[in-house]
Image (tube, rainbow, N blue to C red):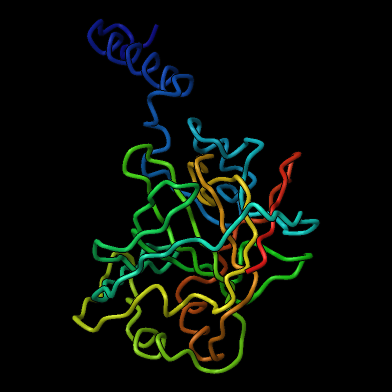
Length: 260
């Protein structure tokens, strides 16, 4: 027996630590192993390993996002998503893997009669979702949360290269360049500024696209794209690099389509 193990107090601490760590890996009510977990988009802590590095996650689940949108079923029971979007001051933060725009209170949507408050939108370059296997250079995710259930409704908007985007024109030049850096200004914009005029969308049940990949998301992916010019898109690409999780299996889920 080593000198270290002869110390009964140290032995008790080590044993307790081992028991605690094992419990965290098994107890779904205790997500310590997922709190602040380091992850990347390639290599040993890339998407193929998220379920290993984040033990209390859903990353190996069967209701995962993003997906390839194909074979969607037209559903006449679906309607345009009621959107109550008001102007917000500009609050941008560099989250490391993405650029995030936080919203002032007051904006929301209704999904199946339930209210979801708009918290933020962030970006992925290239798009995470694909349509018939095709990416766009950028995708915006507008994250809404139900205050009662904690579940999320996320609107995905594809951005393709084209004309300059008037709203991004005042924002892209001010994206914070370092992790946790912020940019705030009283200049206002609305989520409506980034929504396609045609309200057609695809919808399915899915998950967060980053650890812990929680399967609590109703996805609403707008069918029609908006545009941004190459320089605006490059601002995001330069800071985010490649931050798109590979598409996940549909695993029996149905993608429904609403024609606006």
